[in-house]
Length: 375
Image (cartoon, rainbow, N blue to C red; front, top):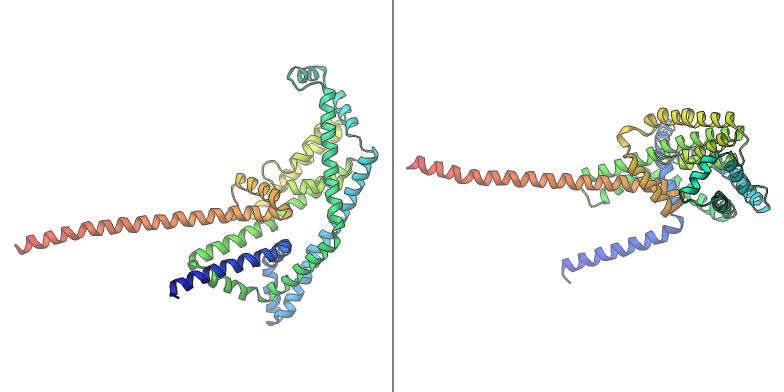
């Protein structure tokens, strides 16, 4: 067998084995993903621990893992447990009729001026009773869907524990052997050192900015919104706070999807003080949090255009669930970097070809000058 045939067979084997390995990891890709993310985020702390412990990597990795548990995993588990209980409560109250969206919409309908009611009818939206019934049905279905998902997630305790165990186990080795693994990946990728460095640099920058920056901003905005809802006596304040935290990951619209309709309902239903307070909190407090925290946490050099972040985040969360808010912008950033490198390569090839053309034109001229001098 020729060397070319052996090389092709080896490339085919390499591809098949890689696909099989990825398929093997798919059931726990979330655990692997978050282990990598936590390793990137806590890597500066781990390096300082290695220096303080005089090179004892095992102890430094163990302390770093415990720091991740106490700083990230335990608080998120407590919040998630409270969210599951809130979702179960909402689900039961909707089923028993304690939460009647039709009644809320009728109150909102009664607060509208007669001219607005007639305008809605003339505009072809049908009667207000039909609109209220449709809205009530949609809100009830949406609340049931959210609460059902919360319950189903809370019931998968065994799967969560297995994924958490795999994540922590992998995280330990990423801390301990992360530098060696990074060097191995850089030398294995069949790209030039310049391209490999740019791709890895963009990968780590997007992960840090997306998780460290956007998640902290989302938590702060969701906490402010949830506390405001609770103080104003709005039902399921924790659930709506978490919804605002998730939606604040989307630029331009963000948490306003939640608090703007609630503020409009409060104002139109006659609760002017509560409505004004909620508008103030949403526009001033939540808005200022984004303006003050985003530049130092996210950084201008790693920020993607807002429309790219919006589309990639929504698409990622649609396809991959909660992991999509990291993977979506990451894929978009790598897409932009790869195409920019490709364009740079094309420009370099065009410059080289133009230089070769100029050189080839200069050679006959020099020959003609030499002939004329000899003559």
